[in-house]
Length: 128
Image 1 (cartoon, rainbow, N blue to C red):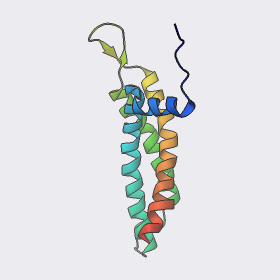
Image 2 (tube, helix red, strand yellow; image 1 turned 45 degrees about the vertical axis):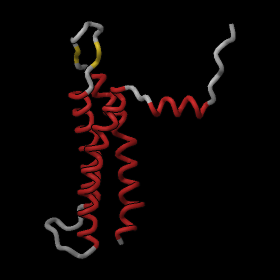
Image 3 (tube, rainbow, N blue to C red; image 1 turned 90 degrees about the vertical axis):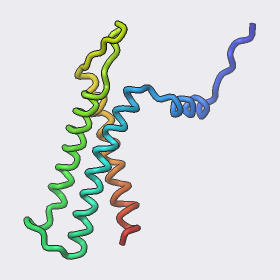
């Protein structure tokens, strides 16, 4: 019998990207939805400030970015907790756990950062 061939690094990563585990995919999608919505609102606020709109409270970009990060972390973790149920081994029975929320928290941080980078380093300069 011949041993199975060793897959290359790229082939392994491509297979993993095509078949992600459902809990991880759900956590990423939940956080991506919250981060995209928040980043769009921040972009609208940034454009309004840049065009000289007089908004109540003045320039609140820094506190709004901090609120955005907190919103993505909390809402993403909560959505992941509600959406990602852990299997119990029993047919038809599933349960929620704090680990689902932790999965959402760990997915939220890089997604939040990447959404800010894409919004303000790529999209914002294109808008002008």
